[in-house]
Image 1 (cartoon, one colour):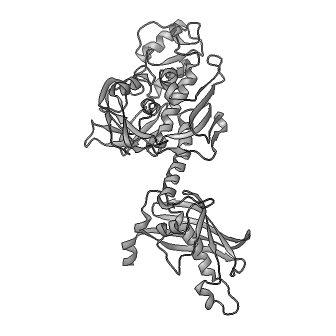
Image 2 (cartoon, one colour):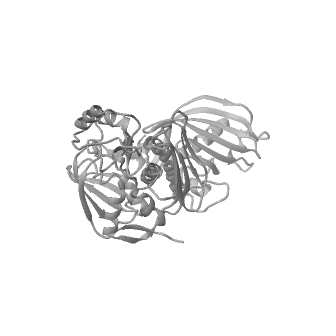
Image 3 (cartoon, helix red, strand yellow):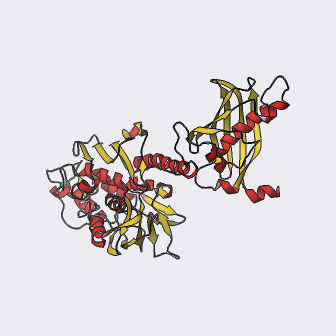
Length: 470
């Protein structure tokens, strides 16, 4: 079923204090056109610069997700993003007149209410879903973090938190229907921290806008009355506080028994929005946090960008083929008799490509190399590897139709076995490094699983007109 993109019907505004910076900010949600995505706009700066809400623009992860472009920053965007993604809004402008959105009550509910007040509006263009068709796994053994995406035909998230702390214990939660469960079950889950972290966070220049109305503080240490008084004075909080007996400072009533776990799931929905597209997958997360979420999202976004590239060049889906010969001709400038890759059967953007070259007696070079003893010239095997490496230049940042790839160096080339008519060359090329317009690759050619040639290549990507001048 075709699902359309969505924006909001009218602008809505709220003002408040930022959680970590303590600044007062006015924030306005505004409608945006199709395929615009989520953009944060700093209207207090010259020319009102915009920051795309994607993981490529994440610049800091100290107790929250900060986006930046140039010298422009927007701090603690995850709760705003969770509200936008939770309501399945695709295109929206988030205008701010300061560096951090208001924290509200520490959850996404104030932003959800704003968006609902603005009204949701379907657009003509279809949603660009990323459908996970392979297992994506992120692990940080040192922190006991594990996040996995599994293929499924909808969106589900399960989160488990266990801080080895009796004040919190082990908690888990799961969202299985975004449309039905997000607002009533997760949007009002508030941010939290441990009592032992409060002074440390303040000393790091964080939680300047925090108070007991916008955060849940979990009591994990005993403090004397004098220690409590000094802490409150340092934080600029003058009202009385008790450690209480519920495990939460001031015996504050939780919205849910497992509110911390639900807030971690809320944070994850916000961070997943930085993929840049809604996804269909089952996400299983153990002890997630913003740093782990972002590393996981980087992996998923790379798959999203790769899929977009494949769709751009490969117009017909074929089993076992990433790019057929027609797609290769859209990517590479080479033509007969010098196009020496027939298809691409594996492609991992910026990492690895596997191409196939079928060697037949019809190759024109066999007429002279050698009469009565046809052998594929070694230099053409090298060229086949190089052309497969040219496909590896695809990463979505360059229009290869306007580019040429020139080799700067070819090293450590070895030819192991002759290649003859009837052989099928498997061209295995891996990215070693990429710096701006220069790449280094390692290529190996196989026939029937046996290596026949190998080498290291350095190449430069130049404009086609510049190449003509040379």
